[in-house]
Structure formats: C-alpha cells, structure tokens
Image (spheres, rainbow, N blue to C red):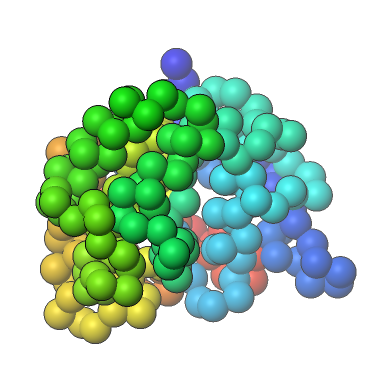
Length: 216
C-alpha cells in the first residue's frame, strides 16, 4: 500500500474562462490531518469535489491508495465528504441518515445496524437513533454528519468548512473533538477552511491556495 493516501498531479479544472484549479500537485501521507487554507473562490471546494469524484478535472491525475481514480464513481473511491451545510436528510431520522451509505453499498441490515451503533458510539451520541435533524443541536448535527462519513470506513475523510456556520465557543469545542478523534482513529483527515486560526489549531500540515494555485 502506498505511503501517500492521496497523490494529486498537475490537476486543472476550468469553468469557461475561469481557472478553478491551475496545475495543482501535492501529496498527503497516510494518517495526516491535512488542512487546505485559502480565501473564498480560490478553488478549495473544487479541489475536494475532484478528489471525491463529484467534479471531473480537465487534466491531471488523482491517486487514492496508489490507484488512479479517473472515471471511478464516488462510492468506490474509499473517501467520504462532510459538506459545509452537512447535507443531512431532513426526512430521515439519525439512524437512516447514517445507514444511507451502507445501504447504497448493499450491506445486510444486521451489519448496517451494528455499524451505525458503532459510529454513534464513536462520536458520543449513542441513543439518538430515532431523532430527526431538526430535533438536534448544531453540535449534534455536526457529529451525525461525521458519523455518516465514518460508518463506511473510508481511508480519507474530506471536510468542506463544516464548522463555518457555528458560533465561536462551539467551533472551538468541536475543533478539539475532531482533533482527538483523528488521533484515536488514525484516519487521514483533509480539512478545508478560510480561517487561519482554525488551520493552525487542527493541522499537522497546511497547504495554502490562492487563485486556483498552491502558494505553499
């Protein structure tokens, strides 16, 4: 297995005349909490979407666990994405939200049940399976979104500014929880933010983006 869980080479993506990603290259070793920082519109979210398979780059390559993932659908890429707006299904309860990815992968229901319970324990929310997103606090919703990503056991979890809409005190508490969880699980986390303080708090390594390019 490759030492680098993600390898990006010469990645380019344009939207008409706008260059969202301009010949980007970088590597992420296994087990890092890697932060990508840059201003709004610099290409951070586009980069995450190309890694997870929601956006097709115009050129360049992405390797995950040493395998080129060109043309590979999202569900087969061994990555998971926590969206900025969390993207929880409002009409599904907590159990159904977390189980969604497992059911898409045709897991037997007994296995689904045990994995959902395990994921809820991991994020410290065991016992809320029957509640709906509207009945949860913002902090609890953050944990459910994380549990939904953890449950499929990906090699990499990508975070697209998931703490951007919470108040300062809650954000600091969730940052600490996220960092402790990363240490405990040993997974690779890739965290996108425009907040320099947050990047410094979380990261083992930081990549700075601006205008679709890597600055450092």
